[in-house]
Amino acid sequence: MTSNNKLAIVAGNGELPVLLIKSAQEQGFTTCALAVTDEAKYKLEGLCDKVYRFYPGQITKMLNCIKSEVIHQAVFIGKVPKLDLLRNLHKLDWLAIKNLSRLSNLNDDSIHDSIVSLLKQYDIEILPQTKFLKHLFLEKEVLSKRKPTLEERVDIEYGFDVAKKVASLDIGQTVVVKNKMILAVEAIEGTDEAIKRGCSLSKGDVIVVKVSKPNQDERFDIPTIGERTIHSLANNGGGILAFEANKTIVTDKEQLITLANKLNICLIAI
Image (cartoon, rainbow, N blue to C red; front, side, top):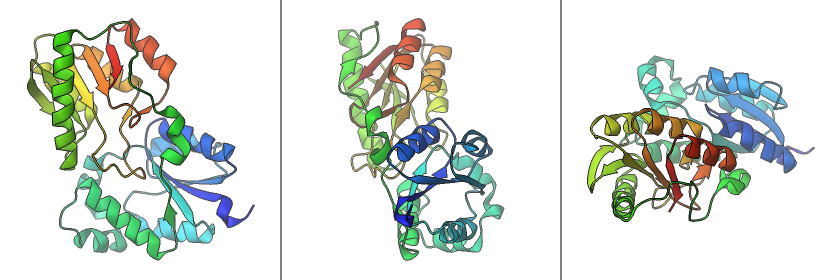
């Protein structure tokens, strides 16, 4: 195969790296994984043609690896806990520090734009996640046996509007709402912790709404739901998980519906 068929996958935690790699291979790509977590390395060993392990801040080593493999296309997929980066700033190499020091803030969008600009200098194109995962998006529908009441639909619409505004500020993409009151807003701690915090403030079910950013960059951080999200909601009080249709990755539709029904969670694409 030519170098045009070679793809570098910068992979974090979760099931998405595995799903993306299988899709890429079906499309004829030779895959080379740059695992930035131990979980990613463990899951991708034997699946990719080659697997390397790097810390997220080892930019120079990753670029040298991509160059040595003669790769000009890359994709970023999987979760890399941002708090881990903040706790390990001493592991950033000089190129990472140089690029981060130029940014006015360390919000996700700023970091992503910096990565795009840097890789462009090295003749590396970042491909959108949707090129490989478009089949995991769902249309608008109520997926579970449990249906939202009229009052809950009002809360869903309210939560959707608020979540969109929060996402536009690059803070987070999830809110927890009840009776038209915002109980929690996702920030750096992630969706599961936001759900836990919101549920702890509520007496009974809550509504969790997850959306994409108004100008979502399909190369990074497309909102995703999976079994972990359902379990997080069920374990902390239950309720409704509403997510933006055609903009959210659903890792396993049928399995997720089965789990939602088992745990009496209302699952709805809006």
